[in-house]
Image 1: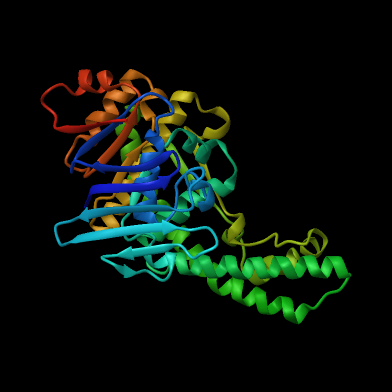
Image 2: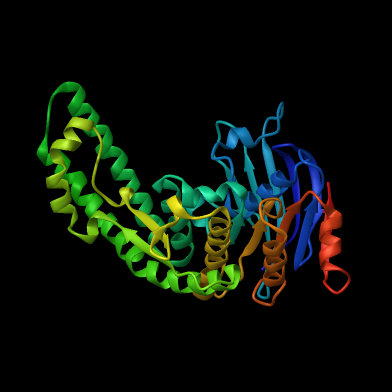
Length: 358
């Protein structure tokens, strides 16, 4: 699977532009501020129906423009797909495949998987638990049918339950029967999400460990630990134990929305004790393991998008990473970098690649 071309209308800093991409390695080069990351994000948005960096679609529209539109041709061994994503504020986002409208974003999301490595992704390790859930939810939505819909349903009833708890708090009232209706819904969908997370974590960890040893080149022992209240109990027990806290805080304090993953290296918490080099190697390994895990589950090579990654790692890691992604295990790769010369000096004349200068 590879994106043959993309046309951009009023997306972020780009007015109108057309780009043709090679099937293998592609480099987007240029000075800071010329729109390299925005082009990379346009590729992601075209294939996923939403921006990787900006959740608010209105802020993805170029200043003083009324809408954005992205179009492109995606080629595979089986077929060719003409894709379109367009957004006008106040209207439903328009998405189509071969001119056939996609009615729900969830139907489009994950059909054309991408893996992104960007500098701020380090917060998956250093940041709050929400970012680790987001990472695993994206991965499992791509690899496990039904996961995304169960997660969407869970979040819908979680929002309803939280709003009801706030009303109870504001009006000094309580209705146990009404709350139990939401509890049952949350348990139904939450248990399905939990089962997938619980089973997939050790599977993904095996893929990650192989990737980490390759990237880091050390004998360090990374370990994942899936942390969930459901590891020690069930929804009924959790809701009962947290009922008074829920009523006092006006929000749901038990459930899969509070799950987390603990990353350790040589039994020590990476977030607190890892060096910058270890954390960078861990992050790159996480994303490449995501790539390989998707390949194994979907029998498809995702697009690999690397944003400004070489500015954040040392020369040794850069050379090692390039050697890996040049291999047959990877399909189309798009990389942004400020230095055209750096790319040319490293790759030389024996590697096929395309450079897009902005």
